[in-house]
Length: 481
Ligand SMILES: NC(=O)C1=CN([C@@H]2O[C@H](COP(=O)(O)OP(=O)(O)OC[C@H]3O[C@@H](n4cnc5c(N)ncnc54)[C@H](O)[C@@H]3O)[C@@H](O)[C@H]2O)[C@H](O)CC1
Ligand SMILES: [K+]
Image (cartoon, rainbow, N blue to C red; front, side):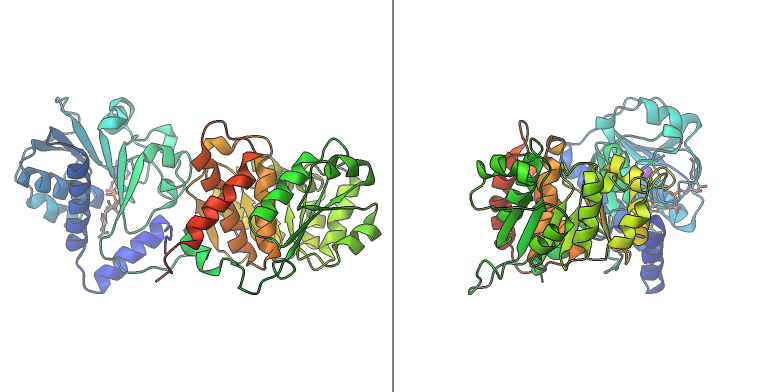
């Protein structure tokens, strides 16, 4: 399971392993060896300075230095302070090479940042800060986290932290390895196993490991009604493309029947562009309730219009049995009365705000939270629904505390209409009966993979057509052991 652990959870996992009989020095040896091997895999023998801090991060550094030296590398230690912990002292005692003071200004090809990791307690200063600002990142291999970066938030304390080409962390990723800007400071992240066994955490990397075994593949005797009915509420004439993008996303991801519910005035422009997606006119809440009667899922918001009608339509849909995907205008329209929205939702519903929409219905929450995982979790609890907070590090959170972070986001998805397709993907999975948290995770993962796979020049119209290849990957996956 690709969990993400907080610094405290990692400390507890370390302590549990030590309490179960694996000495901290053994964990440190494993950690240091993993870093040394990661270096050897990527670089030919060259001059290496290992910057060691006073704690166990530094302890890892002494192990790295000893290993490299044994392999014949020209390596030395630059210590910011003498080792202060028992494990670090033990590791330093086994280091037989040269130790000089930090910032000895020597010619070096690689720098191992073993100054601070999980124990970072204040911003870098003095020589450490100077080095963080001056050492070119392609020379830097960071142990656990780049020094200066808060492990739990991914924020550099006082904006000073090392930037690394490679970060080797242990056992599981921490928030700093997946949340921006931290992820950018880390460079390539390698997660080394140091034998801590399995740890359960409510926070995971979003990957098929989380939900592929419950993907709603059709059974042999499936017929289109069995694969769920999705409805998409369209905007007014000349604002109808978003609904079609969402509808196509829902159809491609496997919903059996997808219908665009359209204001009468927009019918013609839909009709000219839809084939398998069905089309039905509605006017007013009663007609909507009737048209939504048999829907398993509904997408409302893309280009719906920030109007009283959109607000009324959402409330109407909330009284049907359909699981809702609430996006864009259907979020913004509740800006002044978010509690009305939350009162209408239930835990099967999914909100898909970008940060601006998030701020409108959860004012101040993002900037008052230590990072966006906490913000999304708080929002999900408050809304009583799944919250997917979009961004390069999209976070999916459930009211029950489960959360997942997307690692495969890509800049190509920042194109008009991309969010409409995402809403449709999630709606299509909800229509097939997938658990809402898992449907949001799966939709986000498929959407991101499709975008990353296409790359430059991607437009939203491309996205639905890119879904089958991702489904083929998922369908061909070996069963989860
Ligand atoms: N626990 C284990 O068995 C393992 C730990 N691993 C490594 O250990 C570090 C965490 O070590 P810890 O001693 O808790 O903290 P640090 O080494 O990160 O640093 C704490 C040390 O540094 C001082 N300090 C903190 N911030 C600053 C600062 N800005 N300026 C100066 N000094 C600072 C603080 O006072 C302490 O003295 C973890 O990251 C892993 O690398 C093993 O890898 C696995 C086993
Ligand atoms: K470090």
